[in-house]
Amino acid sequence: MIYRNHLQKMKDPLQFSDQPTEVGMECFICGTESSEVPSAGDYKQLACPECGEYKLSGTAIALFKEHNWKFNIEFTRLWLETQRKGGTIPLISSERAATLI
Ligand SMILES: [Zn+2]
Image (cartoon, rainbow, N blue to C red; front, side, top):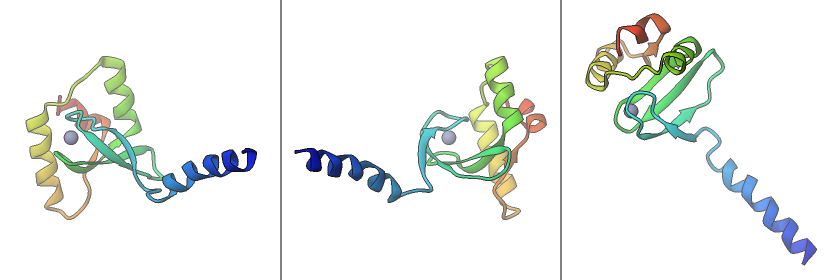
């Protein structure tokens, strides 16, 4: 029995390792369940099924929490669209975020 429990415990980390690059969390813009893409910089990168992929700087995240800001969803998605035409994943800085609420 002890051995079996041990195997059971071993199973969970293995299941997680199937998709090491994706952690479920809510989209900062619209709240839809999204995948967080691990990133090295001071920002969070999210892949939202509704808004697409974007980065949000750590400072911007702190501002949103501090002031309880909410993104203007339509406006923000439109801005993300125009940014993606440049071929990069848009980074929403704290200055940018202040114009998208
Ligand atoms: Zn979204």
